[in-house]
Amino acid sequence: MSERENILGRIREALKVNAPLPGWHGERSAEHLSAGDPAANARNLAARSGTASDWLPLVGASVAEQFELFAKNAADLKADFQLLASRDELKAALLKLRDAEKWRRVASHDGELSNFACKALGLPVLLTDRGYDVQEMEQCDAGITECDALIAQTGGVAVTSRSAGGRALSVLPPHHVVIARREQLVADLPAAFAFLQQKYTPDFPSMISFITGPSRTGDIERILVLGAHGPKKLTILCY
Image 1 (cartoon, helix red, strand yellow):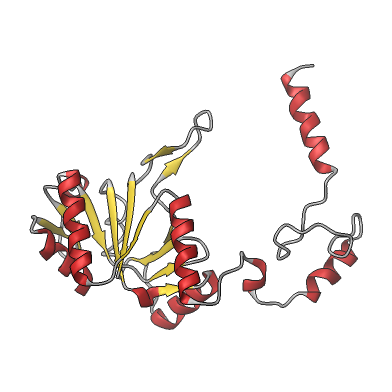
Image 2: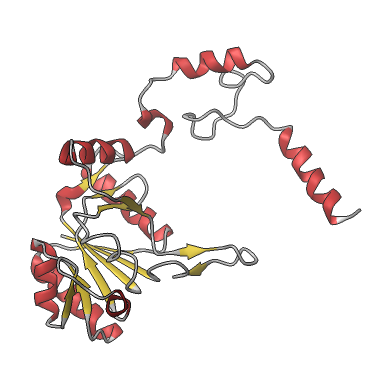
């Protein structure tokens, strides 16, 4: 049997198994699925609440549970998440990164947390709030930004061109360091979108992005490679 026939055979076998409807988190039962009966499936869908949260992975109710979920998801995404108790611990974490990676220059933007981070590091800083050279930014060891929200459901970070110093700062330096406050944690994606809408309506930023771990690709022989199209490392420091 040829490889082509093997692949087609696996596809035919897979098509015999009904996929679960969105919102049942992997359940498969006659109650939820009616093979060959689109009308029955539509009724099952209508029986669900119409909110987007019902279609997405479940999130704990307490803040502690949400931080635990965020930490787990961030780790799965190959991001380094550190929940800190104070600004002193934040400063210590930044200095540890600086010394371990031998940073010589960082890129950042004007903001309360980013300014604190840059001052703590005591290194030359390329600021994106003023005119800057792209090649100089690429040569910086790290890009330090603030963010709009941390999303427990995905382990991702919501940033915009306003909260993260433009479009390039979170992309060009090889190490992206996000500084966040505990109160910026939101439960899920609907909450993140609602927050962004409330914060920026009617004048939205030119860029809104959800960062889920460092840049990666698995295009070549399905081997995961970090840093292919952006930062190789993502560190999230939250206090």
